[in-house]
Image 1 (cartoon, rainbow, N blue to C red):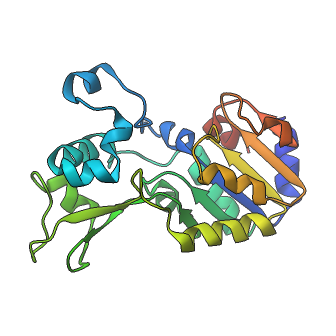
Image 2: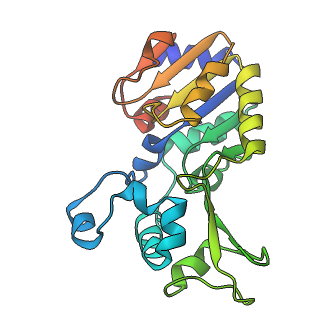
Length: 235
């Protein structure tokens, strides 16, 4: 299967990669939905509740405590999947990386055309005046991060109950529609609307790389049930 994937990549110059949480977990970033023992000792609410817009508005201090401690991992480094995708983009093979992750590791590895469906921890804006703040400002802030103007600084991350950025979504659809090869990795394809993007693919080869089965396996030309880092390391 690895050899077949290598062959498909070698024969195409119009590849799009669509990745989920599994791409980041291999860099030591836990999926925020996974509830560990420490989590249940510290937080009274389920993770999905704590990253919702209504929770952000009603419990801002608890939201920021969870956000900074459970969603920002500045020590994480790109893994072989991030690195190989950046190399393939440089070679002119990968046209776009579409990601559900918010950690910026694709850019850290050298990828230029990264479409972040759920935003990024590296961008934060004052809700009042729009001033930009980097991730370090958020980590170093105590309690609710405040702008010089007095407004609350909100991460440029799509929370539950918020819509995806329409420009990013439209660009993602455009790249997928035009691609010859779509490689989907590290996602169970459950979270919509992102999971629905696969339906726009009209190209010749659909490849799914995930440790567990997905509801789209039957549509794929190649299914590899393995760690995405391991697969890309082989390439």
